[in-house]
Image (cartoon, rainbow, N blue to C red; front, side):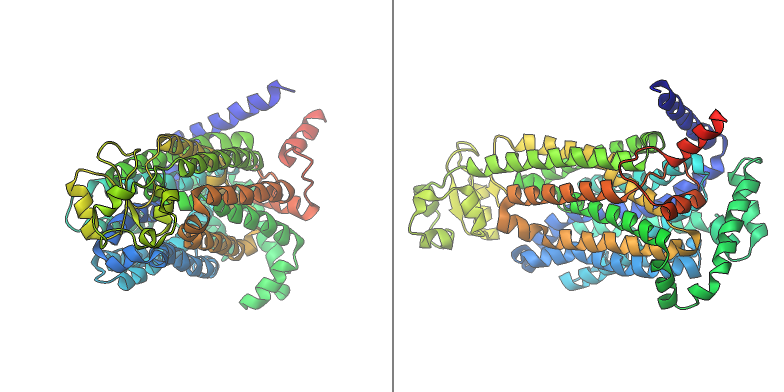
Length: 578
């Protein structure tokens, strides 16, 4: 019993490697479509560094916390609209056409952001970019999934996840490259249009999804594509599976109807679709409520919360965390068809909860040991430069750096060292310049801390825990768990759920930090992650190695969370015993 699963896992990995190397067409298709994931990742990562410099160019952005959250989260709002329309576009226009449309919108959004003269024009660009990302986020994994052999489907769809993390890593490299260039954030955001152009050109040379073509009655075109993807002895089996799915759809044609309302009604009256949505939406929402995109959107800011004041250092450390995310995505490719979707997500969530609880402790310790305020030093800057809340306080002896920052002021560290008592000053460019002239370090986002490096290390472990499981698997699961006739619509519903959760988290993160502190915010995410762990355990079945039609039968039959065996494995065992 112990040797059996290991041998099967090794065989699955060898199968992926053999097919990937012997059929360059499959890899070309997966990589080209996966650039949609790169767009997703680049936009997620680039705004985290760009925001530091946008605040310098626009005073109102620097002064208004809600405006910073709007600039970050409006891309998510656009993505919600894009994902919602993407389901309809996928079913009506096809997967390939949807990806091409996403590239055009994304490119236009990147140009608008690069030339934005005001914060509100920048917001418009963010919405356009988000619209393109929303379409691509659900279409790319769906396209790859439908053009992949079942045995290696999970690993190939994980390429999309790998390119998401590579896009984030690339965005931090670009951010570092332009830190000393005039126009800093404009270059950072404008470069985002280049991958969209590359994908647009590549997708023009690739075919439509064979499943979508067959569903449209274009059987010959579908067969020609399958001949490039599948082995000769597998083609007829795949054609047969698609034929059965289409025939079932035709039998239900009267129920489904032509309108979106009728199709939605038919979908929710189908027990397999409902159970698929329970699983798919749960995985997508849980992915966001573990707090990952707050880390990716605000990574340099979080590093500054840990007490590292330098923007370039914060960006460099964010580059390390992004690199770990890419490493985790590679691990996901190696493990997803070995261990399965369900197990990877559950193990990932357990590790995430441990990391979030550790981060809670680290940030709490950093807050309680923050350097105190030196009253004499503070007043030496003059009344106009001193924090007004500090001047009005009846008990200034209780003030430390953290209390100063919560009063929306800044901490000017002592000339003797960052961890010694310093001054609590008004947060203005003029006062900051005076602090800098004295060769002192200015802290406006976090306080100097001796354990700041530990926070960055745990942040890296958190990303390593997230990426192989909750990072990639929800997108793989949603690309394979719905029946063909409802796949575009249900994938759109799940993607909208993901982006809505993303919007809630990203739009409230800085406000939560302000209200609860970093420690309280990460503790809250640990609580959400625990709820996600229970929900995934109860609602998400294992789909490893199953054909689409077998997944539908599994959902129709029902899922027992206490039964950890894979249905495919059980069938194979039964046939072997016979």
